[in-house]
Image (cartoon, rainbow, N blue to C red; front, side, top):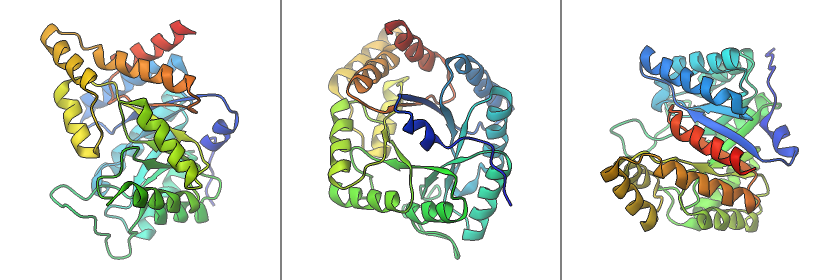
Length: 294
């Protein structure tokens, strides 16, 4: 029988105070791992409620995800939420991975269908695998009932959804399968987030919706991300990033995310989730900016 020593993120939301979390990704080599752990060390004094670590397409980073998830927990004392996707795994393999998570002391999982493997345009489950994120949520809830389960939400519509309404219907299925909270894909206009939350509530989705924010590093980077997840880029931010590149002012993206965070918290958001991209400077600028404003 599994032993899980962590604390469900659901319990943290129930305390009704804003959460702060950071997302890491599995590094490609040891040098990248050292940079990621140095970023973790710099963020540690700010006491995030949890950190997450992503999971490569097709399970390509399974061992790396587990290795660094353990280090984040054991060396930095973080509550760690590993991501898990359906891509390339059978149902039994997913249960094995979840058992590994539990034995390592993790008690939260970000449950995602996952993107198709590189070079493929459509998602196809392996024989004996799962077809939807909602299937993974149901599998976790049935077999690991004390786990906290997060799912993803797209404030401006999932790229594969035919329209906003059908996208929300699919999100509701994931929630009804047992999800505890939603973390949004990146967005740069807070009205997009608040509109999304309103539509979720109208759909009967009552769980917390945690806004996911990206402190942009360059115009090229944000254009790639926006294309990938169909997020809109405000003209003011776009122009600011172009000007910043000409004048070497990399803090523009972080300052935009800081302003977003302040407005979101003032508007009643249950916290904020930073896509740190394993880099500390922008994340620390946001955290220190929030602290100085208190």
